[in-house]
Image (cartoon, rainbow, N blue to C red; front, side, top):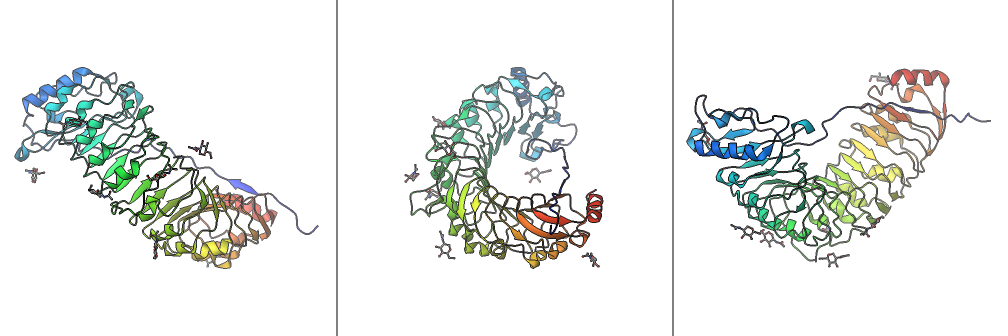
Length: 438
Ligand SMILES: *[C@@H]1O[C@H](CO)[C@@H](O)[C@H](O)[C@H]1NC(C)=O
Ligand SMILES: *[C@@H]1O[C@H](CO)[C@@H](O)[C@H](O)[C@H]1NC(C)=O
Ligand SMILES: *[C@@H]1O[C@H](CO)[C@@H](O)[C@H](O)[C@H]1NC(C)=O
Ligand SMILES: *[C@@H]1O[C@H](CO)[C@@H](O)[C@H](O)[C@H]1NC(C)=O
Ligand SMILES: *[C@@H]1O[C@H](CO)[C@@H](O)[C@H](O)[C@H]1NC(C)=O
Ligand SMILES: *[C@@H]1O[C@H](CO)[C@@H](O)[C@H](O)[C@H]1NC(C)=O
Ligand SMILES: *[C@@H]1O[C@H](CO)[C@@H](O)[C@H](O)[C@H]1NC(C)=O
């Protein structure tokens, strides 16, 4: 028997605890008024009335007493030259025990200078978003995400013409039948509405296109169905840098009149699990600012088009779980060696052998090429990938001998999966390998 078939799989899982929620930056803890100055008495009364409407089992608002409301937790006033008004109200729960709920009283409207209202991560028990919030005309930031409001988003929010940042993400049972109200927020730069039910909002692309200042849009899991526009249409979205449309059931191919293809400033595009079929569109190669492109779990077929050679800034390229069939060398020739950090292409139909020059991709930290049809040997050039953390090559048709020269210099390697191939590994080396992957 020429060569033992050894199954080698070594995996180390490094679990890290992250905060579950992506949150906006906290407001400054102390007010900008000089010590000793007091808040405007009328505004203090409004805050006390607002507090009286709320339930506060965690005593989050225990500091809300005494004369100077500008010193209260979550309250920020403008400085004396600009009137000393309450400009920020940030009562953002992080743990269940700290969630506030109850009634949001319309006396809040007296705070005419309020620019930022953040009630995220609280528990308002499924009540609707109050319509009167649309009358807080000075608001530039409104964050109600993760706070359990439900029902229809009041179109009154479209009156907030100064809004720069709107966050309504992650509330079960919140919906909007159309987005005409959104198209009136002319200054909007950041929009987060993931998980809001927009399945009947056929005007969503049109509504976004009315907001030329948009930089950052997150509409994942919204039930969106159609991302094509009646062509020819002029794209207003010349500032858009990040777009997340993952988990929407588009269930179609990307055609020439898809609005995404005109977003020339895009730096990050996520289209995970959108049921997209057909080829990867040539014109995606025109989005030359792309740093991150995530297209996993779709039904893409054929090759990555040669126009991708133009994506010289691409750092993260993810196409796992599709039906891409091409030679891995042809793929690597399209990608920028100095930039690429993460290549996730597992569960496709890549063929051919890893090239000797793979070491040119000197920044790579993650290679996932498992579950493809790769053949040949693992080239010795892999040892030049000194930033590599994850190497997944399992379930291919690789053969040959692995020896320690491949790996001794890969000091940052944490995950190595090479099982389900026909690789020969020396026992002596295996011991060292276990030692390497400490
Ligand atoms: C008060 O705020 C205004 C506007 O933000 C700023 O221009 C000014 O420098 C501030 N004055 C003081 C004394 O901090
Ligand atoms: C605010 O918006 C609502 C619904 O879009 C509208 O009916 C109302 O007239 C507007 N209010 C003001 C004061 O403009
Ligand atoms: C572009 O945005 C402007 C301003 O919102 C709007 O008037 C115009 O209709 C938009 N163009 C298209 C094609 O949507
Ligand atoms: C998607 O929207 C475009 C433009 O509004 C329309 O022409 C097309 O028929 C729609 N496609 C589907 C499948 O609904
Ligand atoms: C889209 O495709 C998925 C599975 O591919 C299917 O479950 C879903 O019903 C489809 N949705 C639509 C709107 O066709
Ligand atoms: C992509 O760019 C090429 C020129 O590089 C141009 O001919 C083509 O029309 C563009 N495609 C789209 C869809 O904009
Ligand atoms: C590892 O790196 C060192 C220093 O760059 C070099 O001298 C050595 O030859 C390398 N060893 C292997 C096996 O590549």
